[in-house]
Image 1 (cartoon, helix red, strand yellow):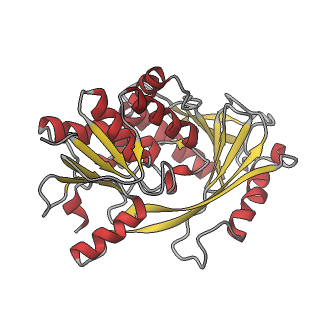
Image 2 (cartoon, one colour):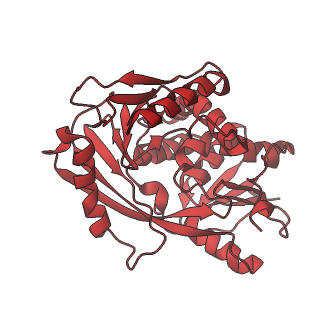
Length: 344
């Protein structure tokens, strides 16, 4: 008889979230990652749990909405079990609007959000006030949404590990896969799958981010110049990230160094904030750009959870529930575009 019901290969946000969801339902779980928890793209700095725009609705946006709406209670459960904070806060988000056309489009999106977001969050256009913690807005208006949340990626992983430890689950550097196996192995896993299927199913995309010493704690996060500017509870502000399809080195480089100047241009109050941390990593992007979930087509008892890309932390609660429902209960609710076969 197998010692465990479920082996999860990979201790990033998808792997640990799936492990926690399964263990909390009574499954015997082991996690194996030779590089340690958060060694890949999940060990970053930003932690923006931000929704897609409320228009052109599709299964990916609906799935993300469900995950963002369930995130607060899901993370509260993790924190209560392990006694460690994830840094989660539904703090909202401000975005500058370039001109009157952008203002009109944002107002139309707000009308759609009233229905699509089920009355549980608001997307609205507000006047800029000139407050220090506001992005520079050429139109004098901002989008304010109340759905966006934040967490600290590294605190969130530590909270999951602590919760799993209370269930008797540790992250192992090596071990024998037993029971059902979930492959949550990030960018390296996408490369492995591409070789296995003889065609590309996704690719790694380099990202870089910085952390600044600036205490904005519970203020809204900002999205400006394609950057997330995210206040965290520890007195830091994370700025990121770049998206690079081609790069010459995996580590932090000039594109990462440019993040501070871009952040200050959008938010001048950060001009004197010192950089206290830098991060670079390779994020997994599946061919469909949605998470890749479900049965490994030609390997009985093996499942895949990959392709979190830039929305992995926001998608993680719903990804975990969906895959564990399939594995433990045979309940298949994976949406169109998310299946492994959709990437082939």
